[in-house]
Image (cartoon, rainbow, N blue to C red; front, top):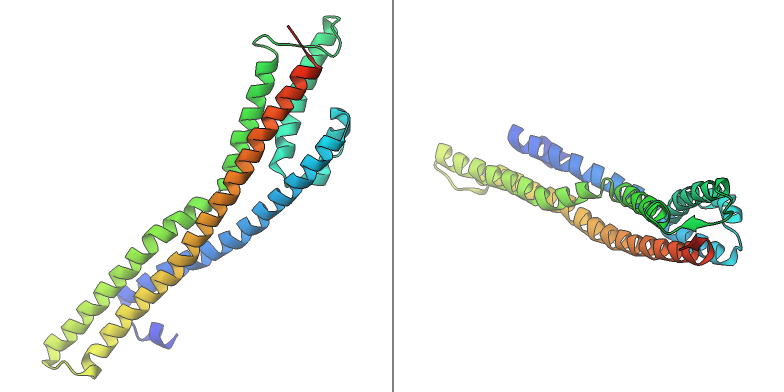
Length: 224
């Protein structure tokens, strides 16, 4: 705080911007840690429950146990579409049958793809801010660094002396701007890379689940 109070107006603005980026980045990191960890753990539990269950309606009745898993959203959307198609088959006196034409299995596949896209968007929300912070914070800090050095040279020019008392304030501004820029950028970059990896794992899990769900539907309900 002492160093902050001793800086000039421009460097103060730079530091405020960097502190804002840092605080928001840490808030996002904690929020995404909670969200992604819950999504992973509940997805594992849901898959275990899914393969043990014997009926889709029994699984659907227990979805509120896995509210943080993206797989439950895929199942819910796929099951809703399947149920609609089965009810349509009942009206045609073809109970528990889904046609493999364009209005059948493809509809379920599209519902699963829409749900996957929606969940990816939800999981990736706010993560781009971490990438933005990681890429821009060092340059914002560098601007403060350059301004601090300019202040130091200005002091030398005005006093005609290069003593420590003259150059120290400008150099201090430069160093603190550089330091805060790195403090904001490094955790953001590490957080971004971590969450990108975790989200890729979840995306692969969603793709695999969609494939398995469609295979089950084709084996159990589909007709030519």
